[in-house]
Length: 188
Ligand SMILES: *[C@@H]1O[C@H](CO)[C@@H](O)[C@H](O)[C@H]1NC(C)=O
Ligand SMILES: *[C@@H]1O[C@H](CO)[C@@H](O)[C@H](O)[C@H]1NC(C)=O
Ligand SMILES: *[C@@H]1O[C@H](CO)[C@@H](O)[C@H](O)[C@H]1NC(C)=O
Ligand SMILES: *[C@@H]1O[C@H](CO)[C@@H](O)[C@H](O)[C@H]1NC(C)=O
Image (tube, rainbow, N blue to C red; front, side, top):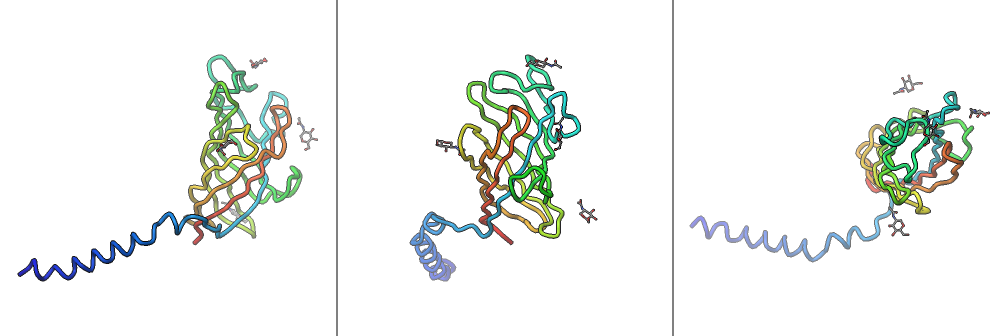
């Protein structure tokens, strides 16, 4: 008796399952449009033994064959840098910052110039309050690199997306500027 009773619900379940599989998830997600898009620049001035006043980044880790003043040879393999960099709306280092980019990068390949990045954009302005968190591989020789937007707080509560990084300037081993094109696909 019990088996007969549950038979109709089994049919309904089967119909539901078949119905869902008729619309593949991959199709729904094929070309998502960002729900928010923002472009920022951030400026990294690496301490080099002479610029302690202006430096916004410091080498905190080095392999045994190097030191923490100058990035090592071998594509800087093993160096880790911590930074607290100003974020601006244009590519001018002297523009009024709208937030800080805070985090670290380390160089993780001996035979290619490449790094891994983990950082947050921290905003506390009238425009934006909260943070956006980023993580991912940064193959520096690529003109553009995509890293993940893995979350956020405040105005960016629970966000996710992709940030396309482009090296906008690179001066010796002291200064670089990244253009960050943030495309958010989850907005609350
Ligand atoms: C620090 O920055 C100021 C203004 O941006 C610049 O004039 C000066 O040359 C910089 N000093 C060093 C040591 O990089
Ligand atoms: C750090 O290493 C570089 C070479 O990689 C060297 O030129 C420099 O003198 C070293 N600095 C210190 C403080 O040991
Ligand atoms: C943000 O800015 C306000 C006003 O300037 C200040 O009171 C507050 O402490 C700041 N918060 C953070 C987390 O820096
Ligand atoms: C770097 O560029 C190569 C070749 O253009 C591409 O295949 C690769 O996906 C890029 N990597 C990233 C992380 O953007």
